[in-house]
Length: 206
Ligand code: UZR
Ligand code: MG
Image (cartoon, rainbow, N blue to C red; front, side):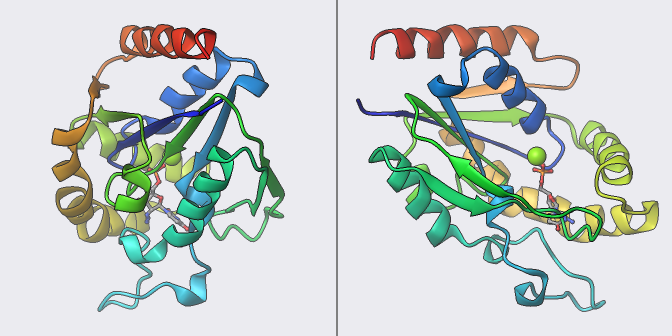
């Protein structure tokens, strides 16, 4: 059995995580394995600060992409992989040890997964989630407050100086090499349905 590797990228807060939750919900756990880039962030002391002394999480160097690529390769070979959960440096959350089990479909998700060639070259299908900047910012403000405990000034600063420039430099250029672009300004449900049907057929034919 050769797993089918699906890559999902898009700008921060474009809706990657919720789109792929929709995919995961449509399959039994043994049929699909999600391995997110978030879990490969380096620790805070290894992340560079900008000229204002603020950590910049939006550059590819913040990701241990060799380990990430190696784990994907191991899953392809049918090996189980373990990795510590990333808690976004939230001291209130105790990180868990995540176990990734090989499956017919492996989903690789994150803002730089097309940028890292050792990841992109392993993908059988590339999906780009696309949303307007204004919509992404709105979602980002809400999420960072609710899930990551960041205040508004912090979110706006990062958006302007880290998130927007990185989108232009490291994310958007790869939209052209995606197989499917899912617009997510209003909804993505039908796009999601199409992707699910396609992946169901892949699983059935394996
Ligand atoms: P998505 N990020 C954090 O907010 N905190 C961290 O500790 C690590 C990452 C953010 C990162 C990036 N930037 O924009 C976003 N910042 O997570 C990527 N600041 O995640 O694709 O789900 O938006
Ligand atoms: Mg996400």
